[in-house]
Length: 285
Image (cartoon, rainbow, N blue to C red; front, side, top):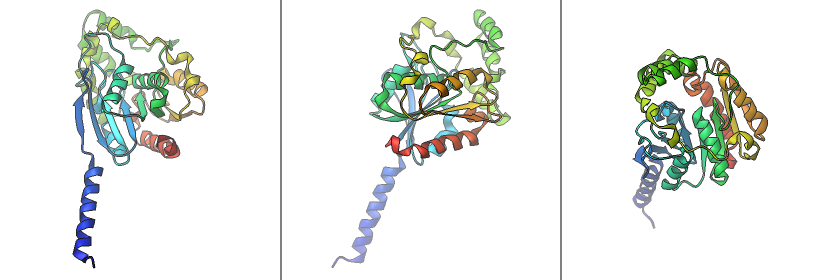
C-alpha cells in the first residue's frame, strides 16, 4: 500500500516543478549583433516592437498584463535604448529575424506601433511562415509617401540641419505625435532625450526595403488588427489603406486616442489586443 505521506510528497514535487516551469522570470540579453532584449512570461510568443525615438520601456505596462498568458519579447531597435548603434549597414527587419533565430522562436505574434508596425509588416511579408498574427497600432507602411507633412517637420529639419539634436528632441516631445497624458509625459520625454543618438546614424547605413509593403498588402494572410487613435490624423490614411487591402483585417478607431496609442489609451489598447488574441487563439497554437 502506498502511504499517504508518499503521495503527498510526490504531489508536492510535481507542484514545485510546475511552478519552476511556469515562473519564467525576466531574462535579458543581447544578440550577437548587439540588439538588447528581454523575455518574460509563459505561453505563445508575442513580440513588441517600438516606435522610432523610443525604446522598450514604452511597453512596460503591456508586458505586465501579457506575461501571465504569453511569452513576451521586448527589444530595442538599433541605435535605441541599450542596443548598439549602427556602424555598418543594417536592416530593422533583419535585426528582428536574427533576434528570433537566436531565441529559437519559430512562430510569433507581432505587435508594433508606428515605425514598429512598418517593421512588423515587412517581416511578415519577408518570412510569412514565422508569424501567426499582427497588431499594427498607429501604423506605418514601407513605401507609402504621405500627401501632407506633419506641422512640426519644418522645425525638426531646421534643428537637424544645425546639428542641434537637443532642440530636435524638444520639437518631437512637443509635437502632436508624442502627446500623452500627464502621467506618461516624463517617460516619453526621457525616452526621446535618451535616444537622440539616432540622429547621428548616417542614412546610407539603413538598408532600404527592396520590396516595400505598399503594393504587397494583399499578400498578408494572417489575422491582422489595425489600431488607430481618433486624434491621430497623420496615420489615418495608412490605417484605412491597410484595412482595405489586408484581407480579413479589422480596424479599430479608439476615441480620444493619440499616436502613442498604448500610452494615451492604455485600457482601450489592452481591451482591443486581448479581444483580438482571444478571438484568434486557435491560429497562434
